[in-house]
Length: 139
Image 1 (cartoon, rainbow, N blue to C red):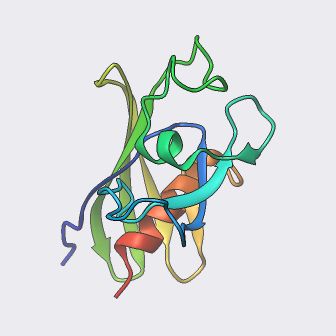
Image 2 (spheres, one colour; image 1 turned 180 degrees about the vertical axis):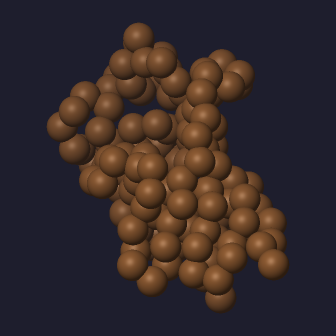
């Protein structure tokens, strides 16, 4: 029987998480949307650059980050693992602006083949989705 797994957010729609940050600079790291602070790349201007771990991990950087497009359609992407049935995970994503939904969709991920149905391969959305699944399915 499928089971509900949980909600997690990858706040900046341009943030491509790569790996957990080893050094955060905080004596007590803040609670991070992915469960851990991540290092990664910013894809806001189309050129991958080293991400600002504070703004990228915690999102809503419009007006705070010089790379965040002023005309961006969304400020954040939130993810929820809807169900896990064997090797198949169903993931819901919600794009939001000003804390209000702007769009949504569902992706399916196969743990055996490591492939998505519904996400463009190599996209930031698929990379964020994979990070969510990796963190939420750790033993």
